[in-house]
Amino acid sequence: SQKSFDHQMKFLKKHGYQVISLDDLVEGIDKGHLFNRRSVVITFDDGYEDNYTKAFPALKKYHFPATIFVVSDSVGAPGFVNWQQLREMQKAHISVGSHTRRHVYLPDVSDQARLEDEIINSKKLLENNLETEIEYFSYPSGGYTEEIKEMVQDAKYKGACATNRGYDRFNTGLFELKRIRINDSDSAIVLWAKISGYYNLFRNFKNSY
Image (cartoon, rainbow, N blue to C red; front, side, top):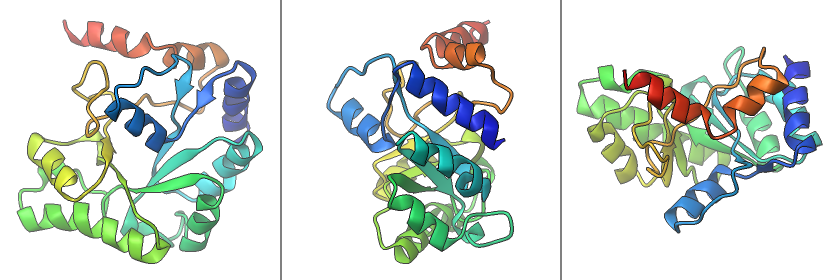
């Protein structure tokens, strides 16, 4: 809900978290920069209309950057953001990334041409309509293989986001960046725990058994 998201953004602001752009993160990792543990990157997947109607007002209010990964063929469809909304958000430091053309689970796609269509042509479609370079990619449901990761690199993206399943323990792999899902019901305590830096370590410990 808009209320919950606003409360979460207020928590970040009140407690001095440094909300940085995905681009800042990737460039910092690439240069070996050590980030403050209170650094946070905000991303959204799919490009639902509520990114504009519910999240965007709070992001503007607190002057936070974010990245929205959109399914290119869904832009303008009922329930999804349209091109005008994306352009408006871009002017307020909300960047746009690719989330494939049709939101397919890429490891299930065996046809090479189909994979290229989802990865490369989604980028081209977004760039042509937004007249800006699309630099980041998000794997639907976090699913990828080494071959898919290489294809994303070859398509000239600067980085790509996975989910908790990202294999790089220290989150330095630019094409398998781990993320943490923040839910509508997360209280301030839960939000703090998830962004404390210990959450992924706990998950790694749990998943090792």
